[in-house]
Length: 105
Image (cartoon, rainbow, N blue to C red; front, side):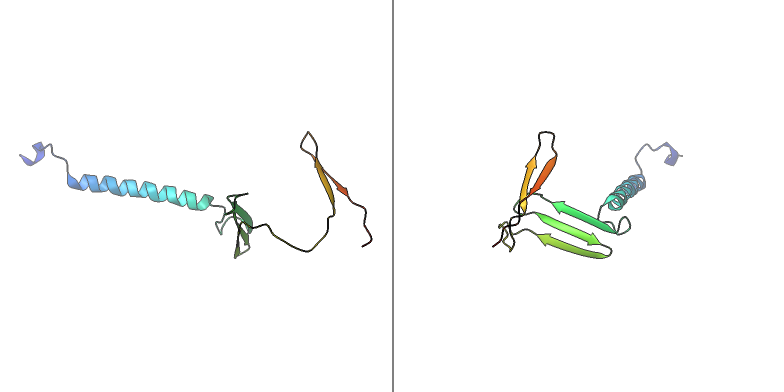
């Protein structure tokens, strides 16, 4: 019975090991998808900010089933309005807002 005395590796066993490896990778990917903050099965309202404070900042807002993406152009915005007051930061980190008196213009 020479067949039973062979010590060579079976090529089919290495294929089984590759299939096991792929199953582990698929399981890890499923865990990552479930933990994603934009996962449609987790929350209804989510805001994700990418690269905050940079010129290429992006903000993605998920409200219900609607996704809205805002991208920064890197330019300073302009608008209409007037100064409303002054904000001071205290040494302990608290912020104090002091409104200005309304001016007649």
